[in-house]
Amino acid sequence: KRIQVTSTTKDISIVTRINMHKYAIDSFKKHPLFGLGPSQSTIQEEFSRIEKEKNKEQWHLHSIYLDTLSDFGLIGLLLFLLIIFLVIKNLFIVYNQYYSAFVLALIFAWSAILIGDYVDTVLADPFLSSLYFWFTGFALSKREEKD
Image (tube, rainbow, N blue to C red; front, side, top):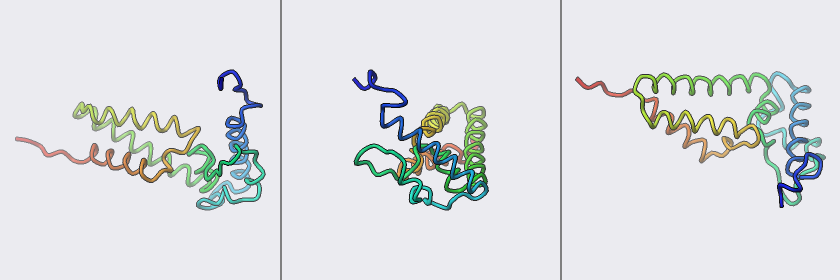
């Protein structure tokens, strides 16, 4: 049933996300370098005017990239992307060195979460993001060389 009524003008979930994307771009244009500040984008008066799903309080902009861009500006987004790039790069280096299935699984897990985080902010969840970083730390830790 949901597929039959899905459209960019009638499905409130899609409309909400599109409106939040527009709002994030507008707030970035107003504060491009450092953004509005941590968790400030969702308490602005303009944010309260966005048409949202009924009875759902929104505490993020449904995109980790736009949320970071709006809250921390271009500098914050670049730092976030640099950290993610270095994590992925080091996972590939370790995988090419040891051919570990665990490291390969983490590469796919990071890829999935980073793609999905364009339409949601899964990494904003402290429990989930800590698991990702803990497991990545285990995968990237130095291995003992056996003689």
